[in-house]
Image (cartoon, rainbow, N blue to C red):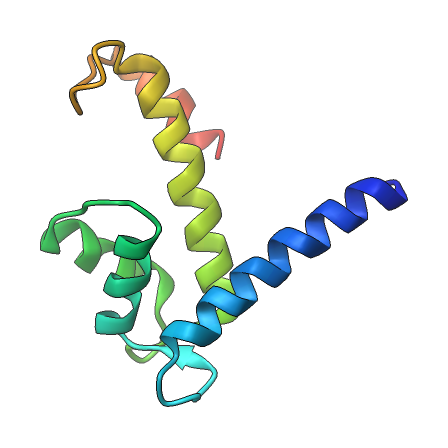
Length: 109
């Protein structure tokens, strides 16, 4: 990684840190499920309570999400959303995947 790539990465991480701190109302260094729901919503994602429960199960430890897990979740959401949008040609929130394509998409992230 060169210096310019490092600067870009640092700026992105700093943005995530600022966002994380803004939703961590009690300044515990972690976010609870409700705060995480607000974070995901403020990033522009509209997820069902069931999808949010899956995210919480995957990224929380004892019901709390650390900054590192918050970043991992943010990266995963962005990557999956980008892959989905490429297949949602009508931009209607629906896409058709072959099973093998689905596995490749989800396992490559």
